Image 1: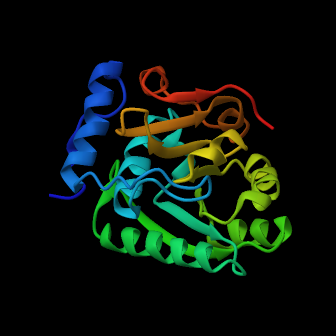
Image 2: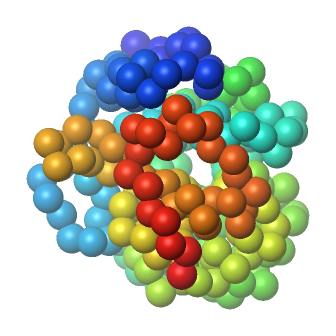
Length: 212
């Protein structure tokens, strides 16, 4: 059953059990891994990305405090880039299919957010009370503006484009060299967003140690 892995135990497990939980998530949904792609494309399907991101994000020790009564996600995309628009729509569909389920008992709500300027993004975060941003493909040149706002507002950034993690996004989902689902964490950038990832997650993630 899709998303059944959310019944697994929360943070506090050892790295091997965390890794098995991540792999179980992929199996539960069907491992949708595409062939090697360009830097701004997503190696995993939107459904699998949503499953893994929402599984990984609870390893933030401050998750419940930061989210409040619900987890509100903004899918940030470049409105002038057709590929970015399509990717955002696909992520929206994956989150729609998550409807009715919870993350650590918190309901999930989401919005599509056009990125034009940092100021516009900041207004969207304030108006919609966003806790997390998903940065869609086609946003490479927008990442400095997006992360400037995420750092100042303490909002978690996530993505399905692994290269974006090297550019400053805190948490990404991709594939390992042996073609398995893999978590990518930019540790210093995540700390600037107020995230404190549990060591058990960091031990099984690919960790980036520089923040642009």
